[in-house]
Length: 354
Image (cartoon, rainbow, N blue to C red):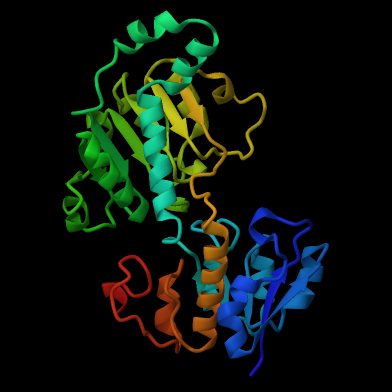
């Protein structure tokens, strides 16, 4: 049986599809007779005409909108090669009974490494230290840094405690920090196993933390979770780290918090607008370290995420549940067979869905 898997043809060669041949996806798709078809659609209407009878969509190169999803007559799965599902209207996909898959576990280690890098760089004022050396202010470095405490004994507070935050906490433990976390959707044992104290409210976490590390996903519930009121709760010497999603933070409030010294600094891999407007005040703040949404980047990521996209599509087309699913409630209403031999914690194999 042949399956039709559709993807928007990229306008140019991209870093994660440099071969242009979908070889990684085909590892799982070729054995089941699934054929990837690129559509060089210049408009949404043109794309819709090419996907009406598709068995699966790869969500890349084009936002999969409500209009596109509603036009799908035969689609069994929409696959993302990312953690975030911002480019797919998941609510409409759920209404149509279409699972949306992602790859939340592929680049955990890279993002955790990046989180530690931002924490250490912000805490040890690496940006300012580097500038002092380059500006001939070598002798000023030690007196300046001597004003700050050592990292040992400081408290790191994790907002959301999924896989990335857990991996970050394992690394952070080696630095002798105290760790607390707020996540109403994660069982306390997942925190205590990592040596992290569960906190029952965001307010308490913000008041106690010397470093706040944001790891929340992108959804309506956590949109602007960190706003003016929240930043005002933080210690004036505290640092804010965001390695999750830009829209979980009210950026205007963050800028105000930095300008008015409610907090001491920030390390950010994500912003509300990417790339940022050249006039964004964050770009000129010495106490802010910025990286261009690259926390997950490594030589392994592109081929591995593409391989996983193919695997997830193949599982669904074979009548099995995917390994991970953005909208797992949909799975209970499908005929897809649960095959996982172990719990996937937050995914479709979680205890709540067994």
